[in-house]
Image (cartoon, rainbow, N blue to C red; front, side, top):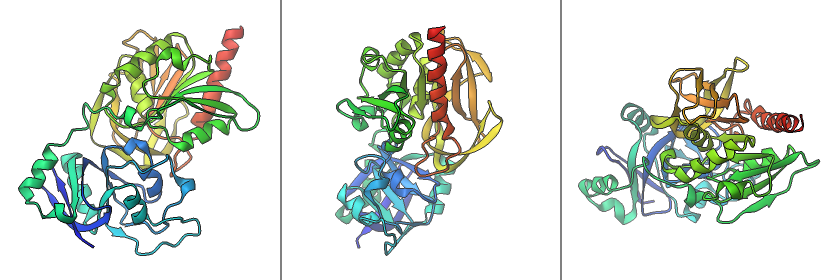
Length: 378
């Protein structure tokens, strides 16, 4: 096994062993606090462009399998673990984790102190980094740091087109059909679609560059914006399309990146968090019910709302409530429009892997569709 190096843009270097493919990879180094669900993390398109550090020390013991994939491939730019499992022990396993990383050309590193690395990122903030193995690890520290500092920053980076479906597709509802949802795929996870079709929703999934008229072409009962990677400030086309959709008063639901784009469509700004929220153990307060939910997160940007919890939309869409907040740092975790049928959350109610405390948010979409139908028929 060859030597590997993890190099950060501030000059910090960690030495370990190659894990997965050998070579060079660059990206934003982030840490994920989930103790389970490493395969779902790897195949979540929201992690595109990021080198993921697992804070749980022992990774890979259950291998990987097709059923648990959230998309058709591994999206992370690189992977960092402390103790890679030497064996796989699970009857569902179809491949080893290292074999899966090598299959998709993901350059990783194992055997480093991920606790020290995570503390460093919490103190300094997430930053650009690179994993170098094989002959690439023989370059001088100065050369490696220079390579890392030449990499693109996540601020100003648009990745939706990279992870989105190239063509529209339709997934039929299971059981009795309740309605139809048009989905803008900004990096959607398979479990999101599963949650919708299991509730009788037929989904029409569109590429990230689709216009409002295209999303509304089949007269859907609702429009949904998915999770996804990148800086929400770069998504001007998707925000413009959403404003057109909101004006029609078609019910809208957004998750993660979709929450940030609803915020921007309503006229609020977005900003980059110091080290973001990534994991399956984040406490969030639902202000409607007063309940605290343990939730799954993966975001490095957030919506900025001054005042509240109820404010006027700067873009003229009426009153907006901050419906959910993080109990760790008061970050806006959800928006709910009072005068139009639209809501969103920053976290992942589909939670694969993770807790199911927030799964009711898909039922809330059915409620929104039902109420909209009553309003139209009144």
